[in-house]
Length: 96
Image (cartoon, helix red, strand yellow):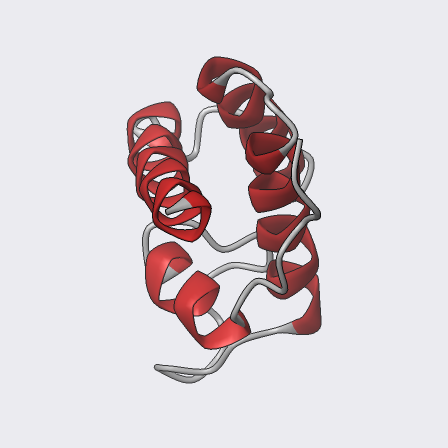
């Protein structure tokens, strides 16, 4: 396995966008948080190290679920899976 690249935070923020945010929509539009950056970096690193995208989706859903009331977002898994798919594409690009 090759050395893990330096993931571009701006790219991770675009991927996470409004589809996945562990903090919630209470922040101003376009703002990003250190917390979101941390989790997206962790997810990208897991994918780089060979984790299954479903496992990474489970990880991010668990993070988000811990920040919300149960049942408040029925499409959370679908949106999170979209983010993980985009992260996997980004990781593939970096592998060249």
